Every structure is written in structure tokens, then in C-alpha cells.
Length: 409
Image (tube, rainbow, N blue to C red):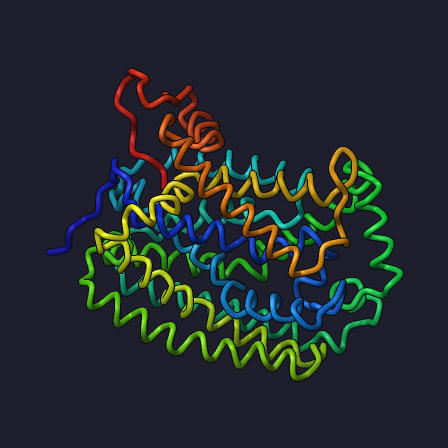
């Protein structure tokens, strides 16, 4: 007899911990899009030095972080839908859609005003769709999610394969900008927040169209896999320590060496545009394997009581993932965009970018536990929650109020 999963009022620290690692890991890749022209994210020679230590930073970031943290974040978003709603037919879909609509609104402001790399808009759109799959079996979710991920990989490979056949001006705009184009972008960012706003809006529109079309299958597929991992007990520490260990060893033992070789291919070919498809497609399909391996290791550590206090800063960062994600944008926008910001765009090499990321990591790992010592939610989690329930939620831990409804993941 099949058991129906009901909504959960409690939080799972294992899920929060994994989310903490994911939200921090995302910044290691996103910093490139904050600090340099956007094509440099895909084609590193587009901007600044890509030799020596800077090449090393790009290489290790690509191997260990590229698409891995984002895959984890997407899977946890899907798991959070099941955690909050359960599988029951009479689940509160009205609340879910209010949450997604407000997430969409916040994402639009985030993307169009602050940073074109926003992920909240596609998450909100996909969240409105994948919710109907939450009652599928674990096997069905894994199969359907995997099919969608493969479909997304085929679409991405097709785009990269056809790059050499695109008009030269389109190739330059998307992948290989000329020095003049780079200088123009740098000058625009240095000029100031308002001056760079139209260009940011144009890039946001392009990115959002791509995210809800070509990238949508990958995103939805990862969410479905996340639902499956939650329902199977993987994310809630119901697997044995031995199973987590075996899963982590196999996934990382296969995924990381293969990703390393795919990344080496980029370097060996001198980042040849007509060879991009091979390395990027390989990383696309290997990143879910590596992400699963990371998750298995983190679940194993969460299962061992000795590590819980050590992991708590990451748990707190995960409970405040929404605040931490958006605050990363505010920090980076202030640093890299001109007045009223500092206008460092195009001045920090990859080594310095990595150093900056470590500083932000440390700050968020320190601030998150301190904040949650006094408050129930991160500040932006509180805003999102209050908007979703359409009433102010109790914020301070000693606040007296009616019992809280189930906590969104």
C-alpha cells in the first residue's frame, strides 16, 4: 500500500545545509558575470587575463562549481514544493501560486533593475508548472526528470554546434566580443548605475527568454529529480550511512575526473569556439552526477552527529538562502557598477574575484547564524512569506502569535 506524503511543518536541517552549500557555490560562478562582460562566462578569453593563476581559478571553478551548485539549488527548489504541499489532492495550491507570483515579481525587479543573471523568474515560472508532478512516484519523477535534462542537453549542444555558422556580428555579441565592444561595456558600467540600466534590461530580456525556453527542460528536470530525492528519503537522512558513502564515492569518482578531462579540452584547444560544444555538453551531463555526489557527501556528514555543529553555519546560510542570494547581488552590484557604487567592473582579475567570493562566503557564514539566533527567518524570507500569506509573520523568536503554517523550504 502506497503512503501519501503530507506537508511538513518542521524544517529538515539536512536540506538547509545542502542549500547553504549551493547558494554559496553559485557565487563562485556568478562573480564572473558581475565583474566582466557577460560572454566571458562562456568564453573566458572574452575579457581579462586567462593565463597562469587566472587560468587556474577558471579551471577549478569550472570543474567543481560550473552548473553543479545551480543544479543542486534547482533540485532543492523542487523538493521544497513537495515538502510544503505534500502529495494530497486538496493541497493549498492557492498559497503555492501566491508564493510563485511574488517570487516572479521579486525576480523581475532583481533582474531588470539590478542584475541580468537572475534565476528567480525562471524558478517561479517552472514552479508553477512542476507542482502538478509532485504526486508522481519516485521512479516516474526520476525518469521524467532525466528525460527533460537530456532534452535540455540536446538543445544546448545544438546551439553550440551551430555557433560557427552564425553571422559574425552575432558570434561577437554573444561569445567573442571585440576589444572595442568590451571597452564600451566597461565604460558604461563605470559611468554609473542609471547609465548601465538600459543595457542590463536588454540583457535581462535575452537571458529570461533563453531560461524559459532552451534552459527550461533542464530546470524543470532538476526540480523533478529533487522531488524524487526528497520522496525517496535521500534528502531527509533516511538512507543508511553506507548508502550515502557508496553513492558519493561512485558519483564523484565518475563525475569529477570526466569533468576534469572535459575542462582540459577547453584549455588544450585554446577555447576554440567551434570546440566549445564538446566541453560544455560534457559538463552539462556530468554536472548532475557531480551535484548528486556532493549531496551524498553532505547528507553523510549531516547524519554523523559530530559534524552538525561544524556544518551549522552552512545550515543557517541555507535557511537564509533567499536573503543571501539577493544580498550577493546587492554587494556585487555596489562593487562593480559605478556611482553610487565603486565601479570595479573590468578591473579585478579572476584570482581577485575568487578572493572576493571567499570574503563574501565568510561574511554570510558568520552573519546568518547570528541573525537566526534572534529571528525566525532571514529578512527577505520574512518579506516573501508575509506577502505569500498576506499577513505579517512573527519575526522575532520570542514573538507570541498563532502557530506558524508549514515552513516553505
